[in-house]
Picture 1 (cartoon, one colour):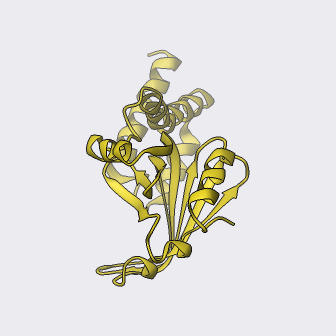
Picture 2 (cartoon, rainbow, N blue to C red):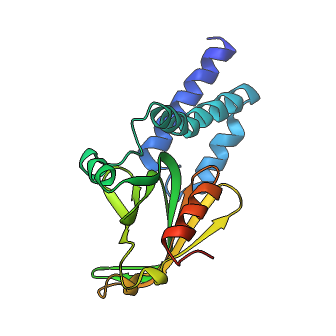
Amino acid sequence: MSALQRARSKVEFFCRQRQSDLLYGSDSQQYDRDLADMDSITIVMLIAVNCVILVAPLILIYVLRSCGVIGLFPAAVKTELEREEILFIKEGVSMTVRLRSFRAPGRYAFFNVKWGIGAFAVTKKRVVGYRGRSNCVLDVPLDHSKIGALQFSAKGEKTLCAIFEASEFDEKQSGGVELRFGLGDVSQVMTILRRVTKSVR
């Protein structure tokens, strides 16, 4: 058996072991011994395999977003927005939901960050944001009595932030919520938000 074949066998064994017991479970000493037995070719191949495993999902997300497969408003919602006259819309954008001391029925998060691909829009009637195609994270009418509790700001030149207290819009919830949408150039949407709301910092 050649050195390359032996290396491949070791990598295959190591990867199977990783899948079966998540890096040997609590037996870190056995992991260290196996790692010490590996030659440089094996280690390089192992690193390459893990890089592919880590990078492949990111590449897939990028391709799907570029093709307009993810991060879109649901068709029914898009139709409603068009009826309301869209002032600004951008889909397939990176976004995060940050929760601080957040409480809701059956849920608590001291600090939690969720990343996703979503969409953001402003119409003549409301401000809407989605994470994925089914998770509506923001839907506030412009004539809402507490629209002033929703604070918009620019984080750098490319990211729009929307910050609010959950209890302002749902009495069953409490804690801070911060939404970040990577819109590219936020100057246009900031100008629109200044015009239609009083919630821009």
